[in-house]
Length: 241
Image 1 (cartoon, rainbow, N blue to C red):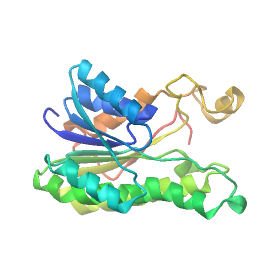
Image 2: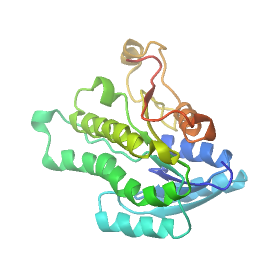
Image 3: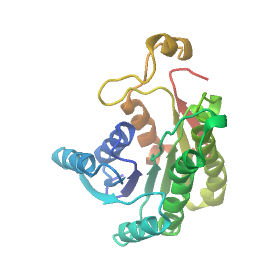
């Protein structure tokens, strides 16, 4: 993938950072997007460059339409983005009966509306190159559900529908569109987000995954090797349904 430009949204988190490192190792120039943790973005950029890759950072809030438009215009001024990984997403959990409008709107705005806002401007420049890869990072919650995450599950499931439709729109233009649905993934500091007994009950492999597990599949889907795979939702979940 040498010389191709990749944009990773939500790159300052554990999964986003691992994906960015994978793409840089594969030869992409990686545009690292974030909004709330500029220090982490800059640290990741430095890490990638120290390892011999190239990267730059860009900051805008996916909830702000005008900010996204301006940010994407600046990104595309330097050339087409041929790999888009929409990883950005937030949790704001509550049982639906007690969920505030703001909790629903914030989660939808980052995961689902955010995808629309970054994907739409990259499409035409991408198809002009006759090669492109779009990967959405979803969640096993969108497939099997999770208590207290109606908003999150709905937003991520919405990405599944978008992936299926967008894959059909541009399949004959050299662009593939897929989603990766992680299960329980260990945080960068080593913390597993649920108790051990619940983890073992939910996951047949009896352990949490690593951010690199998600990154390896994403890197494959973003490569030439995955040129005949599109419109798919692939779980990285240790066997969880």
